[in-house]
Amino acid sequence: QVQLVESGGGLVQAGGSLRLSCAASGSIFSINTMGWYRQAPGKSRELVATITRGGSTNYADSVKGRFTISRDMAKNTFYLQMTSLKPEDTAVYYCNIGSPWGDYWGQGTQVTVSS
Image (tube, rainbow, N blue to C red):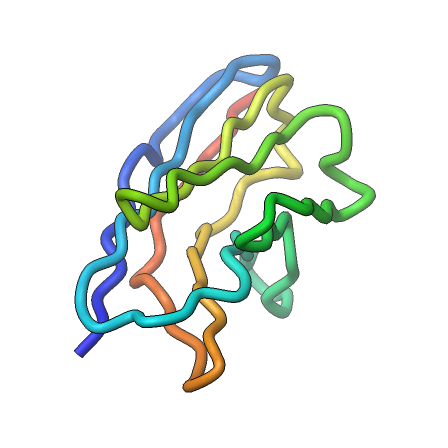
């Protein structure tokens, strides 16, 4: 049984910052990719950022230059540092781990950016 525990969501003013954390526990023997996804009301879930075990990163165009994904492999924890937040960033954010044996998801954490 794999569990992902998310924290750090909340309400922030436009231009502000938040740091999301995702802590994984359970039998995750090989992590290929860690990532953050988000889903706004009425929209499909979209990729925000990913990082591989080796440290390679990928970002959605809408967040490049504003968000940074990082990870601590020893703790099976990864982060999303969000800066210069915009109202358009408002969504439920989900963390994800991709492994050779399947994908795992957190329950989601709400990020609300007010104008």
